View (cartoon, rainbow, N blue to C red):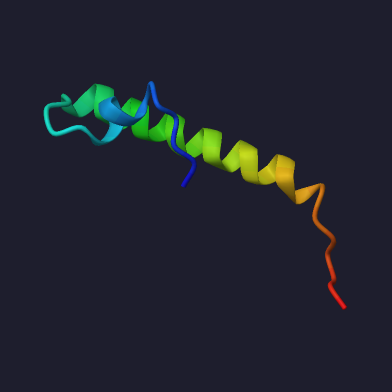
Length: 48
C-alpha cells in the first residue's frame, strides 16, 4: 500500500476518531487504486 505521510497518522494512528479514520483510510485506498491504475498503462500485458 502506498503511504501518504499526511494521511497515515489519521488513518492508522492509535488515537484517531472513527469517522476521520474511516475517511482517511478511504482516501489512502483511493490514492493507492489511482496510482495502480496509472501504473497499469505502463506495464506490458504479457512478458516473454
